[in-house]
Length: 397
Image (spheres, rainbow, N blue to C red):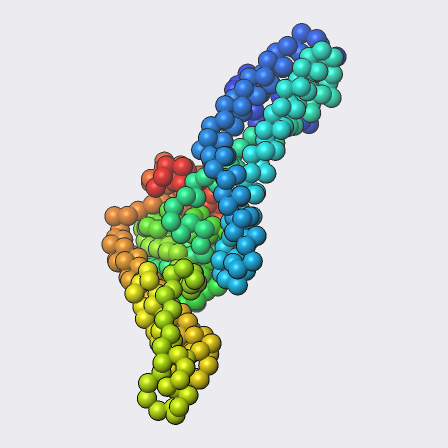
């Protein structure tokens, strides 16, 4: 008794086979099936070696050791922002290491399982081998795709601005369709969405413009290639003659950078000087060095305080002032960054088309990647944008 796989598996190089497609046949097919399993196993082993080199496994292990050493130092626990960042980074690295270790272990077990299956001609073992290989392929696919999120701000939340082009009701209706498409996509990803700004259109339900705040893991990484122009060609539902009409909507995606203003101060970055306070205050002022001057060495920001008789109180007040000034500095820098982002937004014109939606032909084509989907409702109504997004990310757009 042996196993026959689904014909698409036997005569192609793909391995998209369901275990339920397997049934018993004669002994003549057993070696063919095992050969195909071994071939797919070698392919997965090559991909595994490649992905381990890309992720730099040893480097991640060293990073975990460094994080653990930092977390073990009692003084660092006063800096809640640092601890939060380190724990978040540690969790992310541990998830990747867990997957890499699990894949490596399953590949070793897989080799043993195939050897045993060959020796015993055991249908159940071969069936289990196929199930494991399919699972390994999914895990490696996930790791390969995760590595695409390597750009600045990829891990952050994001905003998406949607704006109707010229064309009145037609474009405004198209804008609300695009809005619903992205809201559905975010819902499928279990991302949180908030409409922060909306200008309604001339027709009920239509919009001239809208801004959506999308919160979720790697929200900006997922959507950063979605800035551009969406072109719609359809028979107008607003015309009695139902003439063909072309409408445009622009989308602009940018990271939520203001939520990441964190003020943390290292003790080594501060120079603290104490001196005798000047001005009124009686004999106490002349006898003790209660006044405090603090210099933040990386930025050169200086604060001083002599209002209190206690040096400790003056020191705390001066540090508070340092934090406020650093916050203002970071806020200014981020506003400048935001201005640069907005400048890029102004550069988007109708020439930056990313997709065409030809409803009459039941065809959506991504101009940049060449991906074509014929199932219009799956994209516009169900938010199935992943084929377009994944292709654009893999191309490094």
